[in-house]
Length: 114
Length: 114
Image (cartoon, rainbow over all chains, first blue to last red; front, side, top):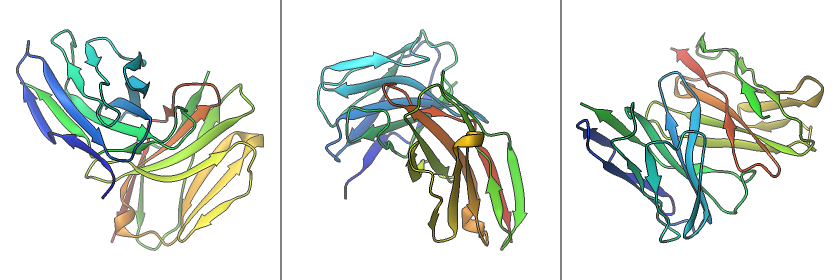
């Protein structure tokens, strides 16, 4: 089945640690996105990539890093510099390099800092 | 600048009632796209509809219908004969042509009680 997978579903981190969230898609989509969702809030864009080996900062990129070495993979690292990382993280992809195209979402990773 | 407002934070209805979720948007562009997504308790965002700014025809899909009115900058979503499975958070989103971002409203939490 085609789709977007995110792992792990739940992640616990100690303060000062870096953690990496996985996002994989087998839809052959060009563009991939990372969003953060806080309780009662909409989604805020962290990073996006429209093509392999290229990515751009979104609205809240501070404390996060990404890579796009393969078309199907777009991992997100939450660094110790991110002051309040506890949140729900959603990965998405879209067929073309165009934000007006429909984005399809993965199941999300819930990160908790202990 | 793009902006989406979902003024209804939470709505509670009894099964079989009709319910309308409001979405008001702001944009300076003449070409833009509007979206609705459903987020059930599992967390994954499910795509419902994409509509471009040149197509003002209302759309119906089963129990779901959408009313797009450019004159009032609104893109409202109606669920007819609501069911318990419709309980979720619903997000409206906007993307302008040439923008690299999809901007989300804060969502409306719908609870359908049996």
